[in-house]
View 1 (cartoon, rainbow, N blue to C red):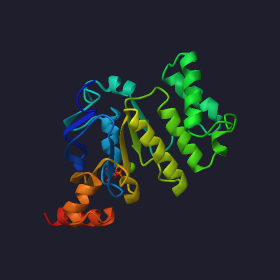
View 2 (cartoon, protein in one colour):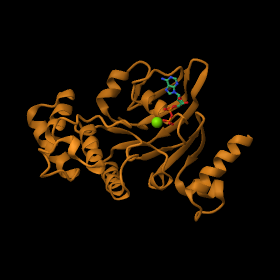
View 3 (cartoon, rainbow, N blue to C red):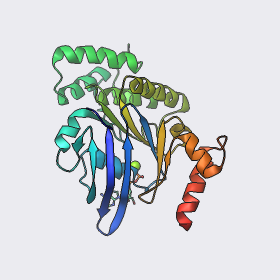
View 4 (tube, rainbow, N blue to C red):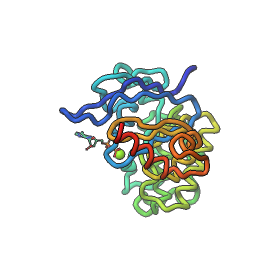
Length: 248
Ligand SMILES: Nc1ncnc2c1ncn2[C@@H]1O[C@H](COP(=O)(O)OP(=O)(O)O)[C@@H](O)[C@H]1O
Ligand SMILES: [Mg+2]
């Protein structure tokens, strides 16, 4: 596919009279790690669910991998990986059974599954733990297994909804190393977070507040624009961006 991986134009979602996502627009080029930062209830998960073709927008449009979220959501599901806030693992299955289960959903032929399974186990640092029950894994391992299951079919575009919300800082860093590795191989990643230190590592990020994108750029650009200096923190950017959105 040529062109950006994700194109969003005036995308809007209303629940009754409440507008959860309000005419957002942006593009994400291939291979980029794009962060979506915002407080709880800002509209992050609602946006990601629309982009994955799970939730129909009220108005506006988005194309993911060239496919429309409104008319081609089945095509989108084939080319994306999605890791939701609640990891989609089966606690009563072992590591390798979880991998086999997800491979089955993706209809991977046995030989391909065997090769991908080795790749995922190695990448996620799970070699030797194949027979452990998912429930026995600690937060960081579980999260890497969930990511492994989400990328078994080698998706072009990866959607991660607060993937590190319940893991320790070391595991978080390991997890980000994996995201970089995938990005280096051309995978586009759209990741939501409410951790400032985490989105610092994104190539570009958008700040969403009350359903509206109030800032968009690289961490460096946003620091200069909102806090006047490259040495500023993203916290300062966040506070300044929300402050100016409130008075606008
Ligand atoms: N199915 C739904 N019905 C009604 N309101 C919803 C629904 N899903 C989300 N919302 C509301 O939309 C807003 C944005 O939610 P969400 O996208 O989950 O925020 P975030 O992921 O940024 O925390 C919240 O106020 C939430 O309560
Ligand atoms: Mg959410």
